Image 1 (cartoon, one colour):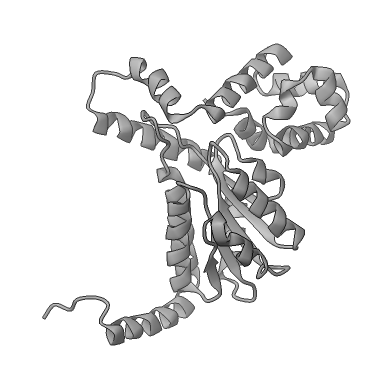
Image 2 (cartoon, helix red, strand yellow):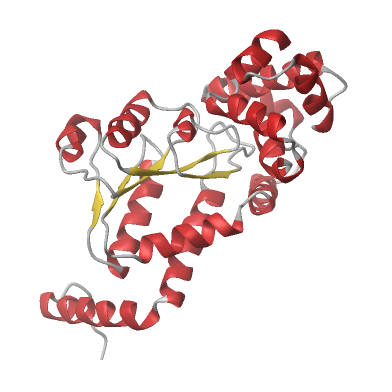
Length: 285
């Protein structure tokens, strides 16, 4: 089932001005704003309570209590730890091989992720990342750091001025080098990391454009992000899957390469010459 955040994003074109204002208030610190009373949410968004009631019904809920229940269930999913997730999923698993069950989960994640991608924002970010007039910095969390590292290695082969921000112990030095107009790409999935949020806040204060790759519940960083790409991550495992996020990242790399092939080819030829000189890879004759 789509999350409420996904529903709000997909229905955005058909919302009224007041409803878009309400949606922005909900998404700003999602899902916390919707956990209070209907009056509190209306006051926060500076709209009327009937506006809240109407939008809740547009999202397919019978009323505000059902809407709140769904938000509470999402919050429970966001903060659950690996042991809790495993205990919750195991009894419902079918009698099939894990490889098949996991593959089905990944397939469903990819399908749901693609259904909610904003293609205009996807294309805009690809063009932005290909523009060497500004620098790109990339960082991730404890586990999502592997996705960040993959994006960094590929993007570095395509263009210059791409930097990987190290773990928190030393990323404070990297903040000093963030300049207005730079782009910071962050990966942050549940349970959202305080260090990554702090990095986003400090970068935003320095006039850096923040881009977020996150899960369907959306990291709090989204309120600072110029672009947010949310992927499905839940699978029949105690740990979440990064396959759908990896699909987004690799698709972006492929599009940038295709759209700017002559420039990419020239840089790749230089890189291959350096590889040959350093004898990094074994040659077969």
